[in-house]
Length: 311
Picture 1: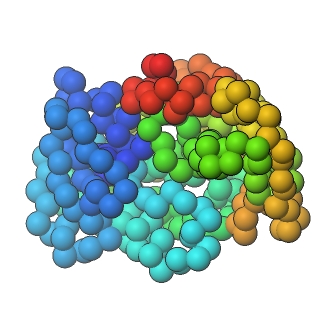
Picture 2: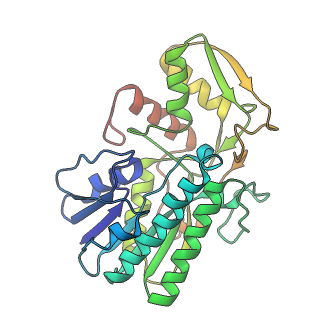
Picture 3: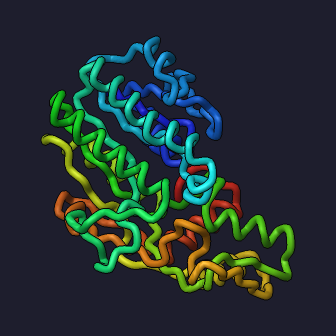
């Protein structure tokens, strides 16, 4: 098959490229601003998707399957550098859809996020629950979903938006696990925790996400649909800190920076757990619980693993 993977030099995209590059024709579209293209079996097109003129020069195989993973994943900075996040996450999605339309893409898979629900009162949260994001990142992901639905309806592109829980594993450079590890390496006696430590969320290991992406890119036969991708349970910030400290052999003092009513930062969601029945009905199930995903991800980072699940 012919796959086009935007953000294919990034964290999630890079793992998916590795899983598809053998036996398929894979083209990576990435500006390399935060990722590193490493798979020699994939073709790299260095393109900034937020630049509409740049995509005019891109030529792709007609009928390809496009996996749109390019985005700025930092929820915190979306509340600060708003314009740049909009360009990367909304304009970038519009331009990816334009590429899909111009090249008659057979399918379009969009990496959305659980944060589109905001602070849901129904937990686990199903796909039909209302969307009310509390961060610009969540708002821009919701804009992306609406664009995907519009293009699917108007141009007949079979499409799916994946509402991802927190994706973790080796090679990641952002998020709670690398943040905590960096802080502990800097000061093994003290660990600053943003919020009250009681925030509880679902974490899904990268292998389970790869399985979901490949499954849905093969099964999508309809106009736009939305699908939750997450583990069956959740884990607190304090529990994650305990796992990391134990694996690093440290016993630091916890220092809570809690001045946002329990949130870690403006736009933080305190509780998140997705209802994954829809995806399970398609033949997917998570291999790891949130705790197991965290434990494996910590091992990946401690041992410098570049392959998901390998230490």
